[in-house]
Amino acid sequence: MEDKIKIAASEIVAKIKELPIGSKFIMEDYFTDYKFEMEDNFELLEEIFSLCDSNNIQIEITQDDMELGVPWVYTYKKKN
Image 1 (cartoon, rainbow, N blue to C red):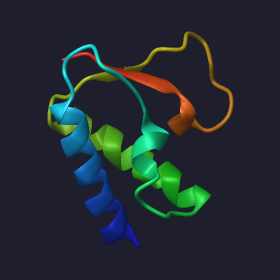
Image 2: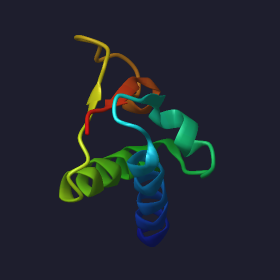
Image 3: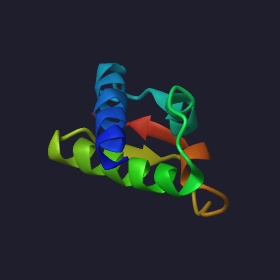
């Protein structure tokens, strides 16, 4: 399963990289192409953040002080 998560994360990061700077997106929109269990989605999100960081792709959650629910339903913004 870990390999599938790494592959999915790489594909999602490639899509994020293609977005114009300032684009807003919901991570869950990318997750729908993959059928992972809830706990795997947390691992997938961690891998996405890690890959974005190592590829100097900056994204941020745009909802101030919202830490409710699962983090892939938040709106993110590509900063660079």
